[in-house]
Length: 282
Ligand SMILES: Nc1ncnc2c1ncn2[C@@H]1O[C@H](COP(=O)(O)OP(=O)(O)O)[C@@H](O)[C@H]1O
Ligand SMILES: [Mg+2]
Image (tube, rainbow, N blue to C red; front, side, top):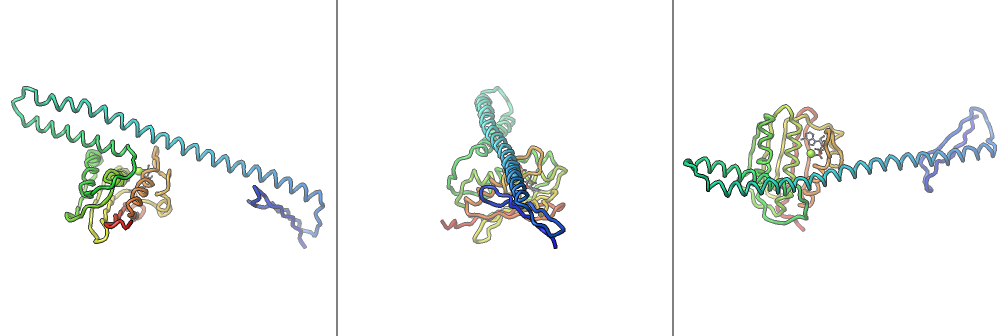
């Protein structure tokens, strides 16, 4: 015959656990013992709750710090963009006043200035976060703009780009800047997954009901366990990563009533697919 005294650990009227005391013989616990265990349980419950609250507070503080970091980065980006644009405008103006014989070089220089301007504009759009602006979006063009931003990095990292753009894509009703953000985040993640080089495969397709965009890399891939979490905020495996890229991507895709999926095996690359419905059905 055994004896058991069981006392719940109560926090705000909810049981979060129990303390059990066993005796291998038959025994009747005295009132004093019951009282002692109850007050031990109360003290323990308070200590456990405090530890939980503390853990929550530390996590929240960490999140606040990360969001602040992001805000500062956005501001910095805007300031930098303006600082770059102003001298570029002056250079372009003065360019044609130069006494140069070969105008061909000037055309090249002008082309490069336009390219820098375009990159800065893209970056600025990315840093700004406004509500969606519904327009006709050319998905292939938006992808090209994104790739322009990372082309240098692709070269430097020896990443081979394979692109298969459906030439008959209809316009999509959406926000071109936000869709650009989706592509940029996915492409940058792909690039970051291939530090030793690889292939970035991008294709667009008209499925009849959707525009499908596929962004595939031959990088390290994502484990099954991570796949379930990557769209949650602040989930990152990168040193200095913010873990906000994919949550933002998913939010924008959902704003467009679209869907996103992730595919691939650990060690064998990753494929992200985004479906944008052609009829938003609002
Ligand atoms: N193409 C990819 N290949 C491998 N892992 C990826 C890829 N894209 C995303 N991930 C994983 O998802 C995590 C979250 O991505 P993201 O939200 O963009 O945040 P961050 O890039 O700041 O880490 C990454 O840290 C990485 O572990
Ligand atoms: Mg990212």
